[in-house]
Every structure is written in C-alpha cells, then in structure tokens.
Amino acid sequence: MAVVVEMTQLSPTMTEGVVVEKYKNEGDLIAPGDALAGVETDKAVMDLEAFDDGILLSWIIEPGQRLPVGSPLAVIGSSGEDISDLVKELKAKKIEPKAPEAEQENQAVEKEPEKSNVTPASSTEPEKSKEGTDESHPPDARIKASPVAKKIAELKQIDLQQVQGSGPNGRIIKRDVESFTPQSKSQGRAKDSIVNLSMMRQTIARRLTDSKSHVPHFYLTRKIDVTRLIKVRAELNESLQVTENLNHPKKVSLNDFVVKACALSLQAHPDVNAQWNNDSLIIKGNVDIGVAVAVEEGLLTPILRNADQRSLFELSIATREIAEKARKRKLQPDDYSGGSFTISNLGMYNIDSFQAIINAPEAALLAVGNIVTEPRYDKSKESFIPREILTVTLSCDHRVIDGAKGAVFLQTLSELLENPLVLLS
Image (tube, rainbow, N blue to C red; front, top):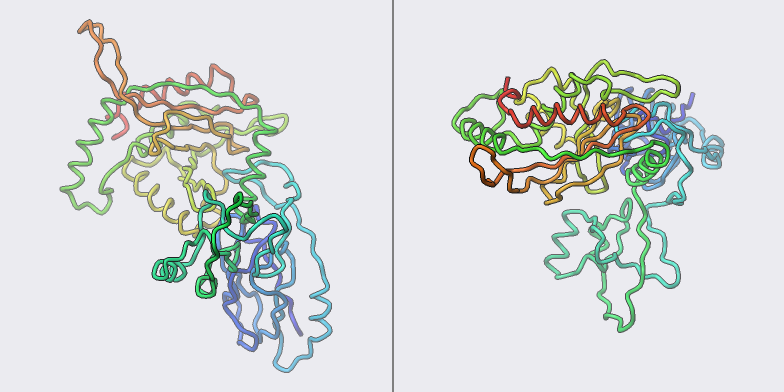
C-alpha cells in the first residue's frame, strides 16, 4: 500500500520548509532512515528521512517550493502500484501553516507566529520583477552565489551585482553566469529591486518583533576595567602556544572570559537566570548560555550547556566548535533550544556599546562592546593613567528583573572580569 511522505517538523519552531535538493529519484529503493531530501528550515538545512520501505514511486513537489509542515512531498509504495489518482489528489491538496509545537528556543518568543507577508515561492525560478524595478541586486545587498558561479564571474569579469539568480532563495548558480549578457548602464536613476527573504530571515524578523513588542525592555550599562584581564590573557595565550595539550585551546578570546564570568554571575544570581511565565517565574535549573553568531542570512544563538560547570578552556573550545557548526548551518534543534541567557559581542566591529533585543522567553541579554583606552584617576599616584575599559549593556525583562537586581548582577560580573585569575580556577 502506498505511503505518503510529508514535510516533517524537523525542529520545535519549524512551521514551513523548503526542499532544496532531492537525494533520491523516482524508482529508487527506499529503506527506513534513508535521507530523501535536504530541507531548509528556519535554522538549518536538514535531512528529511524516510520512515517506510519500498519504491519511491513519485515526487509531488519540485525543489524550491516553500511548504507548510504536513504537506505531501512524495509517495513510497510497491513496484507497479497504480498511484495516479492519489498523485492528483495530493497535488490538489493545500496545507495551511500551523503554529510551532514548541517556542522554547534562544531567539524565540512564546507566542503564535504571525502570518508572513512574503508570498511562498512556487518554483525554483525567482519572481519576475514588476514594472519600475530591475533584476539586479541593490549595491548594499550581500550576493549569494555558488563557488563555481563566482569563479566563472571572476574569469569573465562579470559583476555579480547585475546577475539575477535562479537558484533557491535567489542564489546565483553556474547557468546564471554563463547565460548572462551585460547591459549598458542606464543614464537615469537606479531602479529598486525586491529581495525575497530566506526562512531564517523571516523567522528572525518575526521573533524579534514579537520580543520588542511584548517584552518590557530596560537597559543597564556599565564600564569595566579590563586592563589586568588583557595582560592575563596575553600571558595565558603565550603559554598555550608552547604547549600541545589537546584539552586546551590554542588561545582564549576576550569573549571566552566574558562567557565564563557571566556563567559564574548567573550562578550567583539565579533570579537573572529566569523566565517570565504569565503569573509566575521560572528559575532555570541550569546555566545555558547562548552565544550570538553572525551567519550569512542573519544571526544564530547556539547554546553552551551547563556553562557554570565548565572551565575557561572547556568553554573556549566549545564556543569555537558550536560557532563553526552554526556558520555551516549544521545546528540541530537541541543546539539552539532552551537557553537561559544570551551574550552578543560586537566589539570586533569597533562598536563601543549597543542595546540588544532580548531573546524571549529569556529574561536578559548582555551586549558586549569594544575595549577603549580611557584615562582614570589614580589616587595613589595623584594623576591620570590610561586604562583599558570595556562597556557592557544588560537588556532586561522588567517583569522578571528589577533595576537593583540587574545592577547587582553587573557588579558581580565587573568584579570577576577585573580579577581574571578567579576565572582560571
């Protein structure tokens, strides 16, 4: 008897998916656990596995279609089985998107998702530009192109800004570059173009809008003297370069110290490691810290589990591993679900300080800025001396954290970072 393969919910927050690649062809023998296709979710590209055995009799869809969870994708059955009526019925079937079963994720809000204003794609071909627009990319848009397409464009001296992609989510592929014909530049004003958002970008936009709209934010900023920390870090990294211990990282970053200090501060102040739950508060039993990682299509926040129980070196290694996993879009649901606190660091971009949106249902997020040399008055020397100052801003959910609680948390964090040897134990 024929079995219908449906779009499976591959993550707790997934409501839709895009089949980006078919791994199996019609006529292939299928066994339970076989990967049938690659599916783009709101967080990663994951394998869609078969639950039944038989012959892949028919694909119902084509790659590039955005489909709700539960949509029919393919039919598996016995060789020679007549499924013509079933295929017609399935192709006519329309599934409405459902709310995710679980919203407990880092970067999530515990609300039903709003309907997107973006029209789902019906094929791998991009939507044709309307009158008054052109098909080139805006100058400030990040170009998505395959490595082969980039290489051909480089050899032919083709500006990828002018090439319209026909791959998934407008990605430029080999045939787009090979068939591209340069056009003469218009003397008039540059025309607008429409960029279709990926599922990840849509999810980020919806969840952050929900958080900012429904969570009463307030912000506490503190300057921390990290002069000693910088010296300790330099000495530590120098010693790590001459050792070959597989359990030690080759170097530790400032962010590693911040993660460790936050973990200990949350351990000392469990009321910050909490969540709003309508008429009650949830004090989280574990310190699970999310670290914001910038990826091509937005921001992911993979989780460092039990961060308060890990050493500085363990946190450093784990942070690099999970950040690389995020950049490669290889995160599994458990890698980003159920965080209790988030750290976002823009110091590497020379941002002195910033205010970040809370990853609801978490109650707080620490925004880390750049280190700046500032004069500080030394009473013992009766003069100003240069000190290295780090600015951090704590975004708080006022339903969970009062101003005094947030201030005391930052005080503990400051004391730990100003006495970095404590973080090495």
